[in-house]
Image 1 (tube, rainbow, N blue to C red):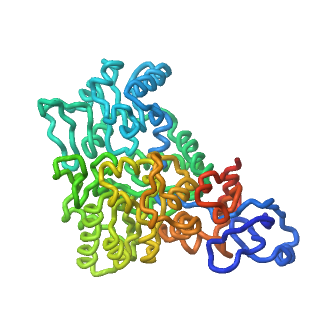
Image 2: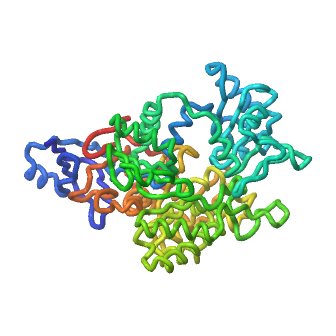
Image 3: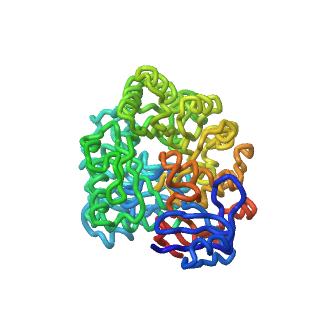
Length: 525
């Protein structure tokens, strides 16, 4: 059995007590920590690895993202660099040269950075592509735009009603579709678009490599439907998953996935770990459900709920009765309020503690302090998308006002309440860059240079807890992962510097040099 002694650099165990001088791994597990001399005496034949001043930490765990969605975007036209409608069309035309027929699909446009400051319309897309179906997905994944040909293929007409939990953008006559589709209306259109024809296993290999390059050795697929499960199961059977992947089944449309061989069991590095529900939309898209209206509207613009209380309570009750974890997408404070209310009702009806299934409020962007206190009481864990402060903080100030924007992703409140908060990137919304999220949590600076909610900043160590020990607790794997202790998995990340020893503003410049899973290197810079 291969044994390695790591020494010669800072070792951050994320455990109480002083840092050890050295760490011994044996096979896929951590065997011991202590002085170099003691570990050499314990394992005289072990390979010695000098860290040369670089920092060794527990590998990062992904609290929420979409592996299959990231894989699918790899064959779509990337639109994140476009800063105008002309830029979007230029990117699409270049992309179309290598794909002369069929649907043309792009991902990642953001009206917040487009010169026009709004979504394109079907007419904008029709100018360049009058006959070929075009579908563009907003960076959040919650909305998008179709040209006239794509609208026709999807059956969206002036007579098509808005679906529950969704909206069809209309032109001045109030009937003709503008091309913009929101939430469930957009999801329905995407379901009618053709699936990628590339090898799904190869796409997953490429997407997985992105996570490994960021020090992540446990990946989430945060909304696993039948199509996504087929991709993941094929990759698992082919031995293509280098690290564990945990999928969460769409509870609104679970199909027969809860009867699959991966349900609650890890096979080939894949496990279906529970359910996922959506309660609202996106704050930058003004579809997150709020208790107080967005600014710049008619005073009634609160975003929208996706489900009524009875439905949400039923979802929670099913998860509780089956004893499986539930993730709930909640961006706005009204959505957070609904989830808390329905969790309490389901707990009362089931007669069993909610905390036993470790429910997670995903995003929790505008959760209030009193709501966090209720979450602590019930055992609901918050997973924050703190990088929103950098990417869309300026837009949130415009949409919400400075006071509400200051309490985006209130990590410090969660820490004060002893809630095990986590940090995620919701990839493919943004790349799974844990280092960047640490920087965002510690600095809370927007792209425009504003400081949002300085009282909600965390120390580097506090931010690290969110993607190590707290993330392990979210998955119910605190006895196996998340810190460096004897008996835990030898899942490690090597950084060029110690995150706790650099100024907060320099955290973003840290580099991942190596990712190690179960004692084996899965990425090296």
